[in-house]
Image (cartoon, rainbow, N blue to C red):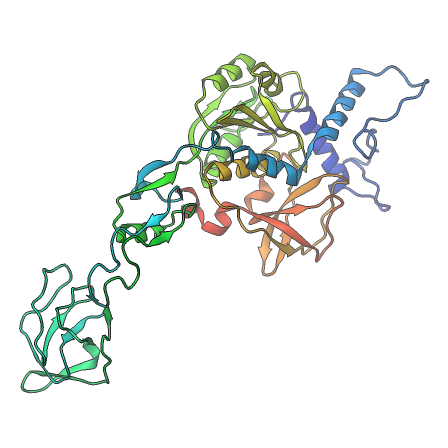
Length: 474
């Protein structure tokens, strides 16, 4: 989904500035737009409009729009601060969903809302760690005819000099001194069992409570439920877990120009965000309850927002100041609190975060696809992570294989692939492009001014690059 210049005023500037400053450079470093023409003045380096003189002509609607755009950039939030605000917005008790009880089959990927405490000793009885024989006293041993299998009732005690066949996990007979592994024993012509290796008392017996005792804390609240956690919970006697539920998210796709199938034609374009955002949001731990296409309809947007019971509403497009950009006017009508109104990041600076109610937020993404991804990772990811009580990922950095042009004042997010101990920047990283991110492993966080080759740069992993597609989206 790309944005029209009339409907995404700041998005259009985003594209112009990024192409001018990052993609096309002349010999002395002066930025040129595609085609070689000098860019029209957009204001001072600090984001303020150009100064006027008494002889300057009256300000046209176009220059008035540019002044408004410059003012918007001036009050925009820095990229690190925007992520902090988004995470903090969801940390209040009212914002975070109440814990729920879920079955083990539904708990994968959730966060424990209470400590996992053992409901039994593990193991709950002395068990055999190996297939072999349970023996009593020193050998050789007379072997009983019947064996002991896992899950069988309590076996009879062993007499000194007696042995019995036993399976891994089976209950140890009383008075057993050790388990002799199958490969470490032989029988003679009289049917008596002899060890082929020296044995120790208690060998290959898992004593009751070896792993934990009933009441021991196995995991703290806040642990992410992984497949291994599910196994531990089941072993410890759990059928359900107290967990933080997945935040509920509704996606509202805005724009009359969007097609849901077929090839672009007659000024209409395919909606790229409708198919992309729901699985990406699920990879961030959300439950996507609905994806609705509303077009450019202010009344429909107002009605959809007021009717939503989601913890987070995500809108696409309409966040700038064009004639059919309805997100800001709708938020004013709702008396919403704007927590972030523009971010100093390229692409995606006209993103926003608003608090609709104490327990409901809205993230407005720009309409251009890569700009929307930037907004998703800048605002939605920290908010969802906090709502789901998930721990923040460890930050890390790698040196860049090539230099990356930067914006003078804004952070840039650039798709990269990871090759050994370096990050390789990818082409096709304009606001309307998805070709670069489709091949990427991560996004490099390029500071204002750019980054030189070899400079260590913070990376944001893409969920599927670390967990795999199946683990990420199921």
